[in-house]
Image (cartoon, rainbow, N blue to C red; front, side):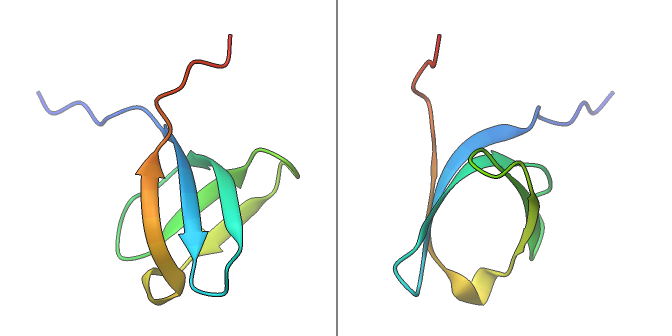
Length: 60
């Protein structure tokens, strides 16, 4: 049985210099990010992304 990975907390560096932090809901050619600051869902396009890093720090 294939079980999908749980949503991953990530840091995304955009081509325009912005940095987004949140939880990546879908990973495809484009994906939805649940922004941790605003609580909004943001559609992220691959051509706008410089780098995506998994945030492995514990926030407890």
